[in-house]
Length: 394
Image (cartoon, rainbow, N blue to C red; front, side, top):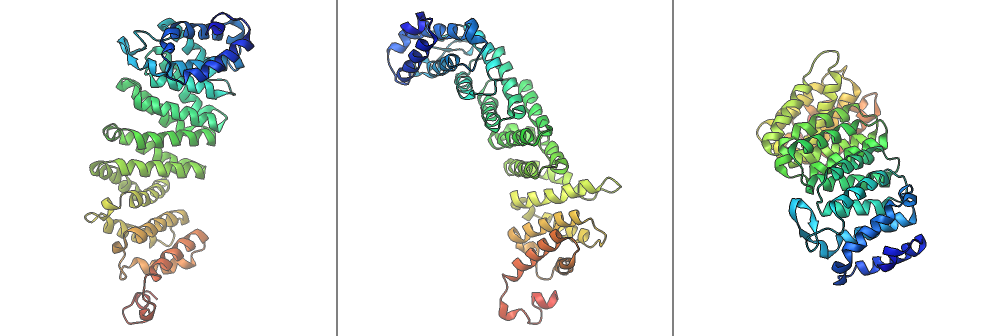
């Protein structure tokens, strides 16, 4: 501690901080005694003219690690006034010093290398729920970094920190709404890597937010995700969007699922020159409903009406091949999970046989898989009997 406080030799200070790093991991009673002098001394080294211009130097990174251990120490587990974490009545840094530290983190987090120490310190402050306007501003930078960084590891770490901030950190409803809207907007980012990171963050929010908050904002998530499912050029992003929508459906109440299903039904019967994208989206979403909420599809007449609607669509000989493919994929999911909706006598089976000679291979393949799965469940000795599935669907 004495060396950190009074030495001007950066190498000596770095070695001293590394030694302190070992001791700070222990629950030593002397931490309380030296914290108030050690914390400001570490901050002084960071704010020195040479160090402040290079936040990625060994000295600054060592200071960040030491402050992380100091703030995270068990001796700092109390809560004081105005939400500030305290030890014997105060933080190891004063409010003014914390503001200076957060300002330094604003610039340090934008650097492209050696983020571990920087992110570690941000997590320590986040865990303590230290409230200040500077920290809110820092989280805005982290959210942008989760999408705009060129490094996948930095995008991942930023997303994890921002997710924890959304879930645990005190904030008003307006601020939360603004963050969620920005998270959705980030799903339209220009580059695939950042866009995928944004979609995965939204999926994590959907899977971890309290059900009540999620219910209130189901349409905020659902409609933009559907647009990405339709318009995104990246298959990785589309798969991630499908997973996010499936998670939303699984965590939503039956009433919410019903309201979202009504949207899809209207899209499926859309007409006009611009209706094809909506019909394709509805076909894909029907499949997601079957996968994620088979209980809802099974209930009442929903499933029977869905199969009838798909059969009517497949009767159109001039049907767009992609629309046919998405509808057949939905039929395949129904066949695997809700076999009672596709009895042997259903008129959709002859259509599937006809589609085996479709000119587009994807349509042929999915039709073949559906029929193969059906035949594999039948008794081979009775296939040619009168009234059997094969006899009625030659």
